[in-house]
Length: 197
Image 1 (tube, rainbow, N blue to C red):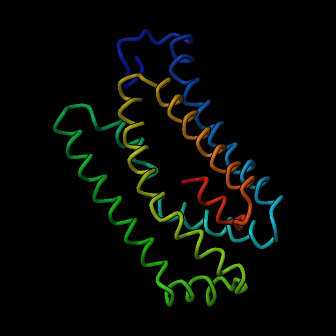
Image 2: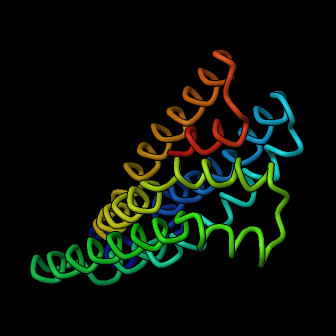
């Protein structure tokens, strides 16, 4: 049996049906980075904007790291209604904590200490990075909710629905990125951050 899945015989075909949508989900998510980099590279000052977007994305990933694993936690733990409610409360508290952490990073003296003093970013890249992180402020929270409910779906065997949700999200990212690119007048790093969210 596949843990958390409906009563499926553990045959290769059943494993493939369960696994394939999840593998497709990760493949679609991996496409986001190169697509956004291609758009940013075609806008003004691509080196500065690619650098700023890369730094902002890396820090957003660091801040959101605790909620990324909510999918695994929900898959393993959210079986009974009581466990589901407790894990949901834990997830909400974690989302609040990481959002406050992101806000603290954005406070100018804190931001300057991290990105100017410690990392040594040039002023132009600092400016682009600061706004990009501001745009990404709700992103870790949104990921926390999404990963939690993806775990619930996986636990109950609905891996195709996880893939459908990712298709919708990637399509929205592409549409936002292309719309901002065609509209023009936006810094590439900010386009990347806005398209991700």
